[in-house]
Image (tube, rainbow, N blue to C red):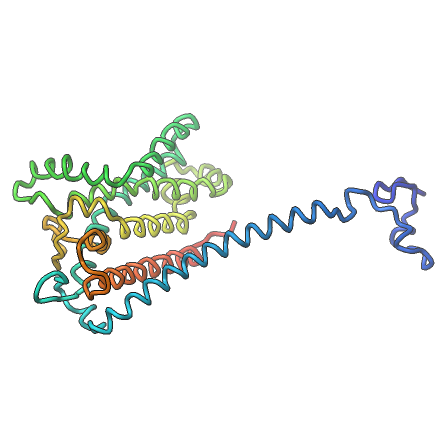
Length: 330
């Protein structure tokens, strides 16, 4: 029994489609305009594909250029300072008469302020994500989340003076021996600054968990809190950990808060009540200083930048491994 085929635009038999006449030609088939090869559409797709490839190529090129500049500028530095002394020495005095280039002093300040920030940001960000994902109504979520993400747009200079003029005096009321410049105040403010990174990414990961898992937990008698803690959070582990890695990378690379409120004294200490300098704060101080271009002291900023790049790269590799290791497939 023949039927009308929209592709061939005529009445055909089933056998005419699956068992075509050997004498028929492809030119005899009337292909609709929607299925025919459209030159304009094909050209547009090629242009879009080329634009996307160009964007990816530009990102790769910029990253490669940054690595190239850091490596080429750091090589002359390591011709004067051995890598062993650079990594093991605990004194960093490139501007003194007796010069030491121990990056450990700057790494200690960077790690200390980062750990303080994580102590503040991880619980606040995670609990905020759980509330927005599992407990807040749609109206509350759409109100709180934009306000929370507004913190990302606040200039870090403002955060730096907030730490110096408000947070540190408040801490001095609790701990009178706390100096004006310390790592505790900037670390706390850095933690407040990176809360949106953890809250936003973690909340997106939790909301991506299928509703069937929630309904299954409710059907077994679990409360909303038990469902959030024992079902949703474990299922979204890869996204939550990825938010932590992102926040750590942001804290490690922070400049102005620690440059303003931490004192810029490169001391090898992990005591948060003492002043210290971070890698980024040192780079800023030297870049704005009077060191002559081409000197060992000036080249030290590229060695410090290369160290920071390696630290960030290791964190990104760790985050990629965690995402693959704990990724849930529904």
